[in-house]
Length: 448
Image (cartoon, rainbow, N blue to C red; front, top):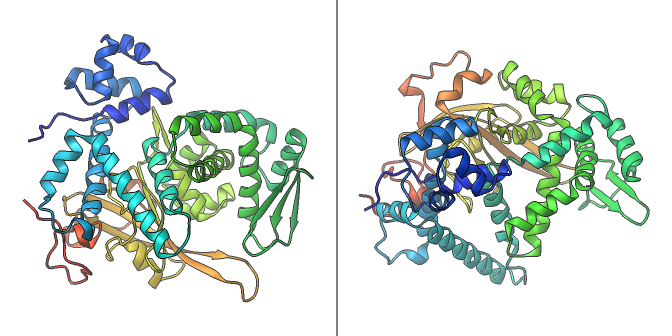
């Protein structure tokens, strides 16, 4: 039976690497041996309360920030995996899964990786397409971002370094275009592009072409992303090299995500954005206007505020289409988000489709009794022209209830009123609420 010893190895290793510390350096600061630290990072030694306090002080975190999150997320992913019908004849219980996540996290992650590959291959065969890596790519990148807490200190430093030369806060589209030309020799032009292209970078003519049907904030972001590609090229290459991705497709997707990260850091500088967000009480519309970016771009940036000693609210983010396909998922709040779609239909990220363009608010109660404050709003993606095909999507942002009062969206709400809580789960197949009126599938895991 698993004990209650905190398993912080993965998070400790991540924080150490973000600070550029070797095991010997950190061990010396903590007054322990490098070999002992190595065992802690691999969850092979118990950690004392005194050492936990030292680590929390060293990295500017609360103890709970060190000891919670990773194991629960891993257990949630395992529960979703074992709810697959291929495991239906096996006598696997929730308690078995929790013990696996606690005692053998590396084996648990390997099992999830194999299941992801199985699903990807099955999808590819069903579609008669020779690209079994395609679905797996986005999942690997999501896991990669999660491991790094969606925060990359080197990329933040690159953005801070080039901002004074770009000029203006936030930098204008004109200023970004001038910097791209003066520093990297690339011209920017707005022109008609095929429907399947929003931008095109021609290295022969050294031209960045942006589709004329993109809205202004998307054009600005495209230029900033291209600057990020050039300005942080070496750092991004080093980060990707260290990730040991399984395929070139995954590397390409990860590189795009990291270039977008730099773009967000340029358009919404870390310290200024965090300070402004707190002053505006995380009013996303006001932040969009202030920094001249989109609603979704603000939501993404809010999830990256994980700088040690200067953190923002730990948010989770989910983006889904009207059919329930989850295309983006990230959680620092601790909420479990399904890896393969099919989230609980009670989540307000789906309810938002009933009120397009309006923010919906939900006080969520999970099966483990954790409470979350969640907002959601629909987005329309597509070309800004007559008869263009558009995609209707919904983006959800949320945090633990303990942070809710810091958000403007909680004004006038009684956050202590139990009657206001909406019971939600992760997905039907792993939700223990047997009497739920909107259940789509029976739970497939036995509970103890």
